[in-house]
Image 1 (cartoon, rainbow, N blue to C red):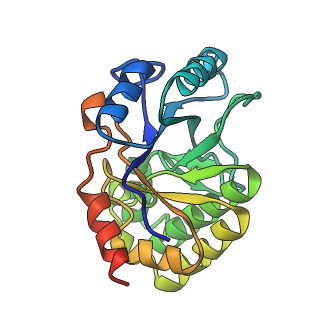
Image 2: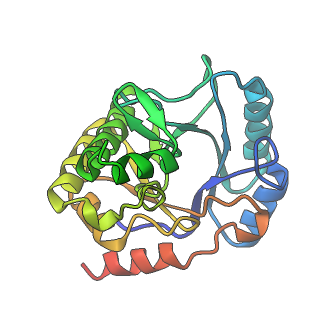
Length: 236
């Protein structure tokens, strides 16, 4: 089960905080020889433009010789896996679950606050990691067609590192994700997860997906970290 580098599963447009129109993104993906592009934009519970976005993506998929999918990216809200999503997800192919903030129990905290709480001994690093792992797995179990975005990217913002997550924890996460059908992206933008983590996830049965998390069309399908991880996995 290799990582397909002709896929870019996570590309933003000017429907949220990307620079370019979805049509521009598709044209660039086609020009770079990609076979699939996932058009994904940030949403919240109060997002109103989702029907227009999904209609735009559907039209592009019908007209394009490559496969174009429609996704939404939403942040984790708590350790039950709840995501900041609109009520209706009609015609959405995938939900991209992101650790933009840190879920601790029933609340979320910005990473800077978590770093302060760790420094002040109000939180233990191990508890922060455990809460992130639980929320991540629970999101895949709660919703269909979940892609986990930039796994562990929030840890350095809290003064922690991916190396602090044990192999047993990664394997346990992988088993829950695989059982739920959740996929994990290897993110070019955030250079995570590492090749070591990717190997453990793949061994647990998780499908790994290439993505740039591009916010500009000129970075679509351009891989360094992702290619390195793919190469490492090919040697196993």
